[in-house]
Image 1 (spheres, rainbow, N blue to C red):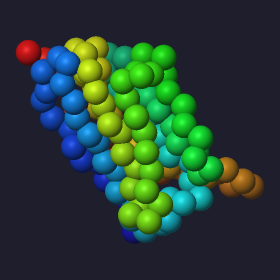
Image 2 (image 1 turned 90 degrees about the horizontal axis):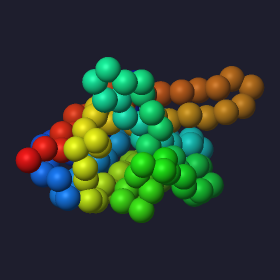
Image 3 (image 1 turned 135 degrees about the horizontal axis):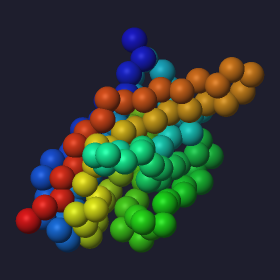
Image 4 (image 1 turned 90 degrees about the vertical axis):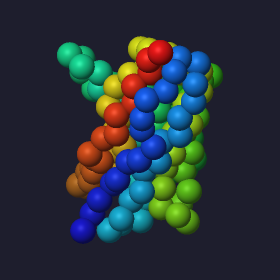
Length: 118
């Protein structure tokens, strides 16, 4: 069964840190481009960071310099280290795996809540 399972969310004070993890099962994420997205209440889901199968990373301007995406193709995981968290980072964070080609294959996790509040 193909699954992406996120973990590591929670409540943190402004300026704090959290590390999110996404474990893939049922497929090898080595050939997939991986990404973290987030959705705040009343807002559309937005891209946070991506890590291509080749290792290229990209970040949204709002998290650049504060968040770091990394992938471990041996452990079949992708992580998001979040530092200097702000209240506006509060959202449900989702992991996504996508592989292009003749047929695009895309998987999403169920999401993990991150709340930044004092």
